Length: 72
Image (cartoon, rainbow, N blue to C red; front, top):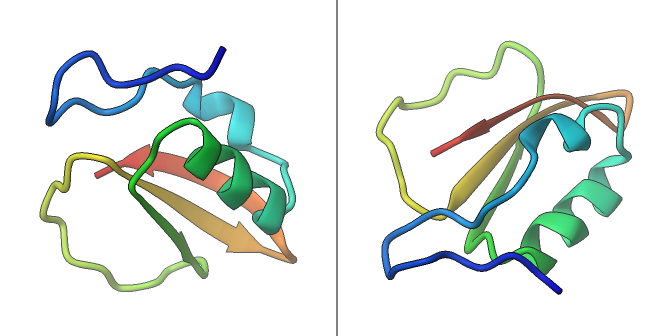
C-alpha cells in the first residue's frame, strides 16, 4: 500500500532517510509513487529559495545518487 497524505495540504507519510544513496531516477520515481506532487533534484551547494511548499520533496544529488533529502 502506498502511503498517502491524511488531509489535503499534508505531506505524504514517507521515510526521508530511505532515499539517501538511491540513484536519482529511482528516488524520483519512488517519491512520485508515494504521493509527492513536486520532486526537485538539485546539485550540491545549489542556491534555492527557502519557501516551504507542501507536497514537495527535495534531493541533493551528486554522481547520480541522492546525498540529502528534505521537505518543502
